[in-house]
Amino acid sequence: MDHPILTITHRIEFSAAHRMDNPSLSPERNLEIFGPCNRIHGHNYVVEASLTGPVNPETGMVANLVDLMGIMQEEIFEQLDHQFLNEVSWLGKIVVSAETLAVAIWERLAAREKELGAPLTLVRVFESEANSAEYRGPSQN
Image (cartoon, rainbow, N blue to C red; front, side, top):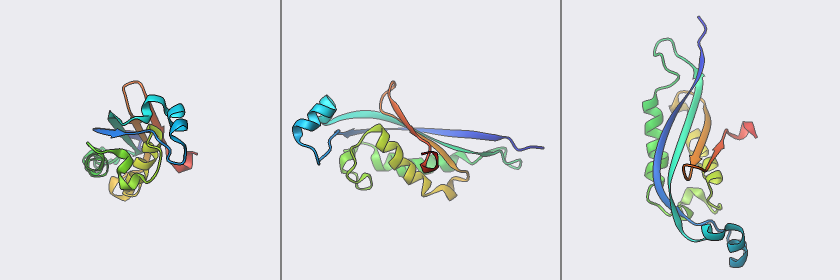
């Protein structure tokens, strides 16, 4: 019997503040580019992480969602909830956007891929119900 390939996804939510600002630009240029987002403001972020692989015939699962949930809790919620993202050390000096968050979160989760039980294939970051960014990893670029 073939082992179908499926994708499983877990979603986590956190609240955080950030400021769209590039320190290498003048305050006037930052305001011109980022407008009101150049001020400190917050979002209720939603992050989805997906793993893809064959269904294990013994467990009936691609991977154990409990493992994914725990890693996302540690690497995302506990690190980012109610934080000022511009000051989170592992985000470095990036301009904090949904796009850069998606890549940074991918890197955090990918570093623990062996614990996840299946390959990480997508990280999607929603900064609102209407706006999101998704990253499928460096091999997709």
